[in-house]
Image 1 (spheres, rainbow, N blue to C red):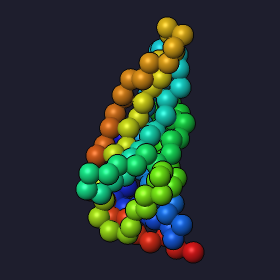
Image 2: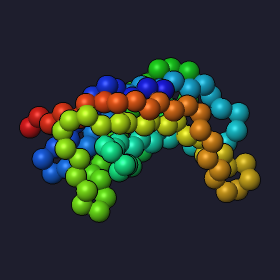
Image 3: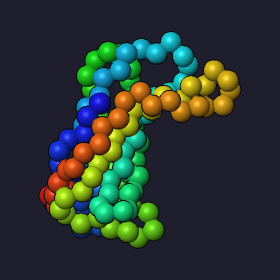
Image 4: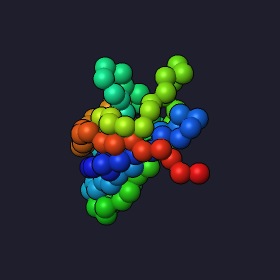
Length: 113
C-alpha cells in the first residue's frame, strides 16, 4: 500500500490522489476499499474511495473529491494517508479491518487543464 509523492488540486478545489496496493485473496467475505485523506496543519479531508481487487497483483488506485464544507486545499505541501480497508460481513454488519496504511508528506500541484 502506497500513496504517490504528489497529488493535484484543480481550480475548483478537486483533489486527486493516487498510488498502488497489493492484497491477497481474503478468506472472509466482504469488500475491500482504498480510502484516502489529505490535510495541511490540523485539517484533514476525506478524498473519495476506490473498490480494491485482492488477487495478489499490484494495482493502482486513484481517488478524487472536493473537501467538504467549502474548505479548499491549495497547491503546496500536504500530508496524505491511504488505507486499505476490508469490510468483514460475516456477522451481517460490515466491520472494518485495516489491511495496510501509508502516511507521509506529499506535494499538491496545480492540476493541468
